[in-house]
Amino acid sequence: MKFFVDTADIDAIRELNELGMVDGVTTNPSLILKSGRDILEVTKEICDIVTGPVSAEVIALEAEDMISEGRRLAEIADNIVVKVPLTWDGLKACKTLTDEGRMVNVTLCFSANQALLAAKAGATFISPFIGRLDDLNLDGLQLISDIREIYDNYGYETQVLAASIRTANHMSDCAKLGADVATAPPGVIKAMVNHVLTDKGLDAFVADAKKAGIKIV
Image (cartoon, helix red, strand yellow):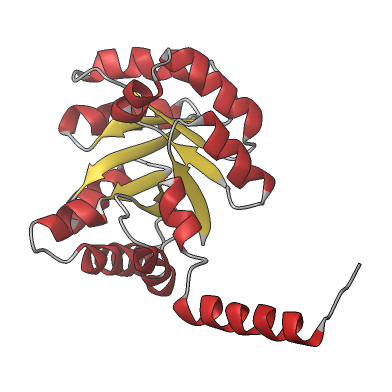
């Protein structure tokens, strides 16, 4: 499973990229706002750091305007993925941009029917939002499973990009369900390393090394 980092924080992206933990980046207007920077400027800097896909989201609501914004965003770098919402106008924009040879990420997916439409429109990625479904006491992970089954049944090439990930467990659960990609905040990716038994074992090793007077250098 590929790891995308869901942030516009340049320092966080650079740190994870240097460790080989970043296969791509996803951004949205909220993350751009949080960065406090111009969308074109910060997106270009991200593309200079990461060789994989970088999602940049349109803000228009009408298809023709989405297409215009998507074309402008795609000029930033070759690895730009134009991000459009899962609306009827978003699907129209997806079809046009895909036909022009651009990568498209259809976002804000909350049902298998929506995911099926996105695949039919030629989406490169579909972004089902796990956490937001869980917030409503619905099963976000079941949606990942349903989309995976449908896409595999018919050979759709659209990649399942699990989004709105809140916990480290979400990451391993998505991997088990066959998500192609999971995008998560830097803190969630870092939290995957944590385990109480690792900490306990390390404390014991350090204590024993001190007792034995072990020195490596």
